Length: 262
Image (cartoon, rainbow, N blue to C red):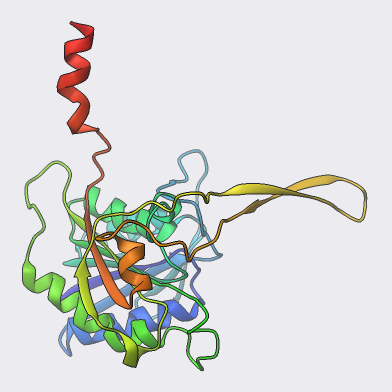
C-alpha cells in the first residue's frame, strides 16, 4: 500500500511522527509512506489553496518533503509532483494537536487536507487528538492517538465505505478523546456536532509601538455537543469516527425552497 501523509501543524510537528508510525503499520514492510507537509504551521486554514502565489517544495529526506503551502496544497504537490503521478492508495492527515470535532471541523487545515484528497478521488482520513485536563500531565500528549490510531484506521479500511465513483466521495474525520490511552472506551460513529454558546472571536492588543492588532480567540472546547455527535463522544472517552462529504448543499431544504420560488 502507498500512503501519502500531510498535516497542518507543520513538517516538524510531533503529531506527524505519530501519524508516520500509524502509516508504517498500515502500509506494511512492502508498502511506501510518503510525507508532504507544510514547512510552517498552517492551523485554521481549512481547505485553502495557494491559488495566487507559487510554493516551494523541498526534499528533506527519503519520501519526506516540506511545502510552503497549506495542507490542501501539500496533497496537490504530492499527487502531481512529488509522487510523479503514482497515486497513493490512501491519504492520512494529522495527527492534529487539538480536536477537530464539531464546528472546529470547518476551520481545520487537517480536515482540509483530507478533503482535497477526497476531491481527487482518493480515500482519506483526518486524525486529531483532543486535549484536556487528563492529557496535560501525560509524558506524551499523543499517547491515545499513538495507541489506538492504527486500530481505528484499519477499522475504517475494513468497512470499505468510500463511495467510489461518486462525485463527492466520502472521507473520514477521526478525533481521539482527551483521556489517557488506557481509559479509551472504544470507537463510536458520530455525526458532526455543534458547541452552543461558544464561538471564535477576536481579542484586541496593542504592540509596544502602540499599534492595534487583533488576535483570533477560540471558545471553550469542553462544552458537550448533542448526544450521538463527535465532541460528546470524545468527552465521554470514545474515539469518534465521522463520515463526511464536500457537498455543502442543504438537501433537506431544496424542495421547500423550490416550492417557495414557484
